[in-house]
Image (cartoon, rainbow, N blue to C red; front, side):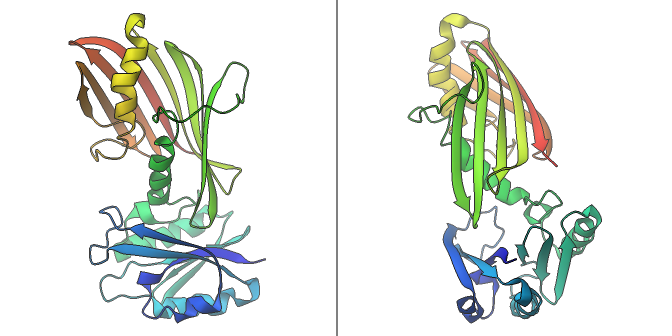
Length: 285
């Protein structure tokens, strides 16, 4: 069974090895502060396949090619249904995907190198940085975006939004289902590889002044949600900590981390609270 994984070209001292492999997708990503590589202006990410009988050979070669001239914390990883190879400079971990202890050992080693925990594979098999990038993208292409249409209801009486995209060779899906209008509840779920739930969030919101419900959504809620991820002081699950627009004030507060969090969202009109939403969620294992 083939192993699939991503090689960042800029992480290698010699990229010719990539030509020996089957490339299934190429992505070029502009470098931001989140990547932590200020000496680069882009990442060229090659999603490749490695035959099962060649994985140990290529893992060793790649380990010797990882560039440590700027930092010592580059890695690449490859997985099939049973095993997960995580490759650092001069160190290769072969992880049993059913054994959490294997992942704990690998993560401890990587953190000692200085690699941020958010960028590491986990037993959940979803690096937090990868999740955040997709989540921000998906939210801007669903309810927050007034031009996006709903999809067919997945449950009786539900309103649904759906977004999917190929990220680093993996099919990623975001689905948001909610019920109600001025008083509503819903759930967002992120799936990896098309059918495996990896992250989710529940929410319940109440519009306290029903006469302003639609206006508040159009002038405060949706504009705020379209700024998801821009304010680093709160988690990128709703909007920024504060946004003012045409007499409305939107606020959001979050506690915890993306893998286990709570949040509260409020909208004020002329100083009066007219809307409140509470949410909580995290990683699914």
